[in-house]
Length: 440
Image 1 (tube, rainbow, N blue to C red):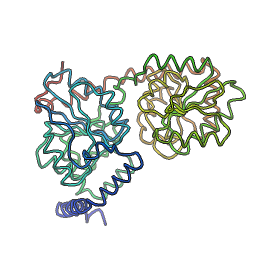
Image 2: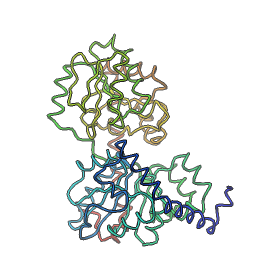
Image 3: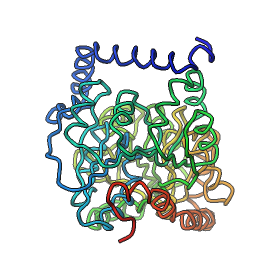
Image 4: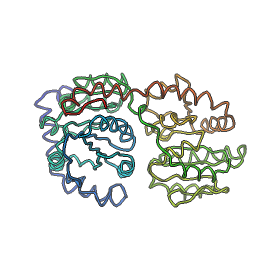
């Protein structure tokens, strides 16, 4: 299909009608897909009705602001904004939707009073209508890059004010969407306002037809550092017993073996070295432990209630919501998803908490952030596993080597922490329309 052939309103309508028809007819396939995910631990069996547009919580009285965030990273980035909005209005309530079990678990711990979590419904017309009929949001705030045609068309049809926050448009997504400009333009026009993470994201959104686009920076900079339970941190410090420790944070398949290889390289020169691996998907913990044991490493797992023993080479932190604990324990952190072609994970959290931050070449999802960190000397990119071993060893051996990275990272995160203020200022007209003030 050529660019011209999908550029007309009539063709756009035909494409949407086709999509709507396929999702309407796909009910049995969708239920089968959800059942498979539930069997794999990727759906909450007690709340699967929410994925079918049947909410499990009554709509509260008063104005309701709906945030949609795909997963953990996006949902964490909005917590500061949720807190500010609720502090500004004693009558407002917040609905947060996500699509993953781990994000739901985290939101259960972190959302304040007057904020409700629900799983987002699958993008099927009946499910979408049931969801919107129940919640009737006064304002919809979507985070980063989620584009679900049925939901967005229904939001637009109902006249619900909407904005896209912390908007991101990767080069790959841009190349795909630009092939269907007449289809994506009406979807983006659902958002009266798009607040982009970077000028590159803003330019791509404008070229795809978004009407009002501004760049205010990345909301992740305004997020509070992840918390840590003091007693749990003290217990880990006692178990560590002065041993050198480094963390591979949010690892993906293929990176656990890299962490093990780095450990074997560094252990002879760093006696007692403890390597902590925190998998991005905690359900991989047992698989990782078995793989590392097969490589000859002694392993303890946090999900089993264990602390690292003096004889353990590796500690698998396969729990949810404890990254703040681990960042406070480990002075050197490698950011996961970066030594395999995944796109990287958030480097801001370890930078906020005084870690020397390392990552591999695949940080495509955080290009603007990594460019700023590297320009300030606040993070150290490495080319491969061998380079990671060299850099991690040098930083573990020398606090003087870590200090410039840590201080530069502190300055970068400090100068960017007001992104939330710029976001609220830009949202003021939409918030006023929803009956919510923007200042406490």
